[in-house]
Length: 289
Ligand code: SF4
Image (cartoon, rainbow, N blue to C red; front, side, top):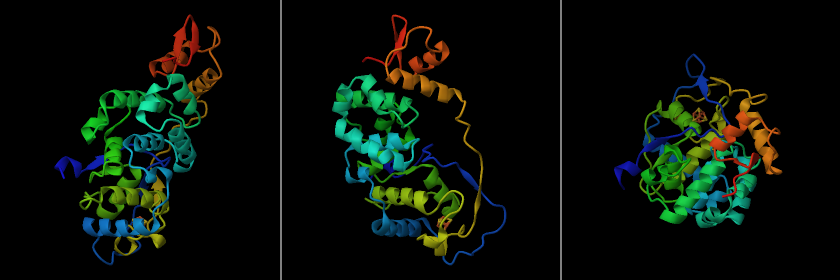
């Protein structure tokens, strides 16, 4: 396994959770045994084998299909993504199928997932994959639009079986609480399962504010067991924001073109810049290509 494939890769993946910081004060429990990276990996792998979530994108190792799931999950909660991913893959099962779709159809299908620029990037990435083939390493994936270090590592771990560990906010939180932000390597051939186990532990047990330590496989050894955490920062208000106004204009375009004078030119310029709209003879509409 190449050294570059056995590394941690950081991410801004949110899963809808705000980052949290630890309460001042000492831990309520002393660790019973030292929690080393090896012990942590062994415990999470065993726990994932027994209690991992059954999510539809875990039934495929197709790199394009895994990429779609990761792009959808970048800013949207798992329960909102599940049905949308199934429908998307039924309609466009391959990068080539998505590449052949008109941009307007792709934007229409993204409705309700938010952060619509992701649909444009995914469409562009599919067109590159259709023309140039599927990337085979982290560096290759990162050359695709909308694919940063985290998403590239996630596709490599979850689809290609590389022993990398992509670090989203949940995984970063677990490593901070258990290993004082120390590094973790996947045992050979276990990058996929260790990554999925970390995702599940962060999403269902080691929660941001009140972790469920009583059901955690690391509890007897975790130095943070029993602690509570306060919000570090809140997300910017969506209500009344420019992002909301831009989303509303895009929703209007999903129903048909708008004549000049029927839309805010500044908002329109933002949509055009993101590839989400175009002007044709003064009318604003979804992109045609
Ligand atoms: S759930 Fe509790 S015991 Fe488990 S890793 Fe998080 S803080 Fe530690």
